[in-house]
Amino acid sequence: MRLVTKNEVVKDAFLNELKREGIKFAVTERLGYEAFIGYMIEGTLEEISNTLNSFEGEEKEILIEGFLAFKEQINHALEHLKEGEEINHLLQEGYWMGDVLEQLFKNGALVVEENKARLKEDVDVTKLKFQFRFPYQIAKNLESIEKIAKQFAFVDLLPEYEIEIRELEIEKINKALHIAAKYFEEEAVMGVYFALISRGIVANEVLNALGNEKVPKDELVGTFLKAMPMEIPTEKGTMIINVTDGKAFEEILRMLEKEGRIDIKGGKIKRR
Image (cartoon, rainbow, N blue to C red; front, side, top):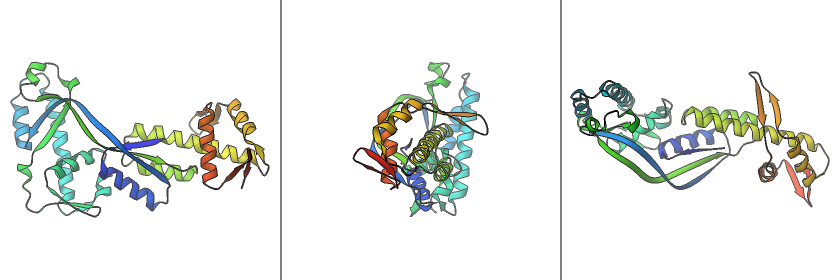
């Protein structure tokens, strides 16, 4: 139920939006890494283009396609950055924007003030050095590829930010994941979305089961675990929620207690 990023720009922009919407979250920072196994051609955009055009291998067409897409992303970012723009607005273009901003930042080409980035006035973009990277799976003939590109396994040790959405209300979960879709890949967002929705549904079922009576905690936990899995009909199909681990269920109870929605005393639970 957590989203992870190593990009500080993405992290800050995402958290700022969550704060504005009053969505509760927790952030854990730890040492992480980025690993890339493949090839890299480094140089100015013109140098990289010349290198690829002189290449005679069977991979030439797909490499040029990839480079043109990369170049288009850079030019698109530069158009926004000439006058300056808020970073969170830029990142709404797609997660690829984070990589372009990072490469420009490492070139010393950006001025960042508060949450706004712009291109420095004296920057000659044609002189900037970029890294065009492609995965090793593309390489069909290693000997020819290694004449134009560096083969390497690159590991970058850097801070990693794990962001947990601490909400049980379905409306706020929907809002949080709508924001997350701007900054994270669809597959990651969808997994977290359904996990959070499942937790929210179970929490609501607990509140409904309690009513106004005090219920022995062990009895409540046992009843819910035995009733699993829960089958929830949806507009487009069926959603099945399965909680068979007592520790996972008790974590939901702790969240409800922390939010002030239940009291747990003397082994009994009561709805507030």
